[in-house]
Length: 77
Image (tube, rainbow, N blue to C red; front, side, top):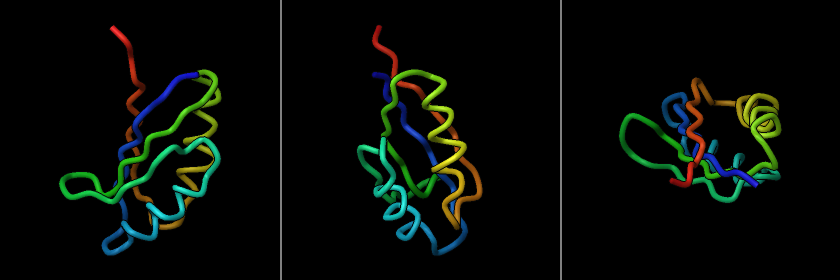
């Protein structure tokens, strides 16, 4: 399994709704609304990079209110 943090920008006033919607998506371990340049941070897991891509593009990016995402895979050095 691999993990990734997905940094999400939302429409104004939509961070809470987006975090709640993302938290209900299978593969999402946690979703928090935060302050700063991003509005929501999601921790997700998938079997491989292809499955992670499908999770982000087909499930997370389709949540209403999301304007942009940045996926940061976790590495173990």
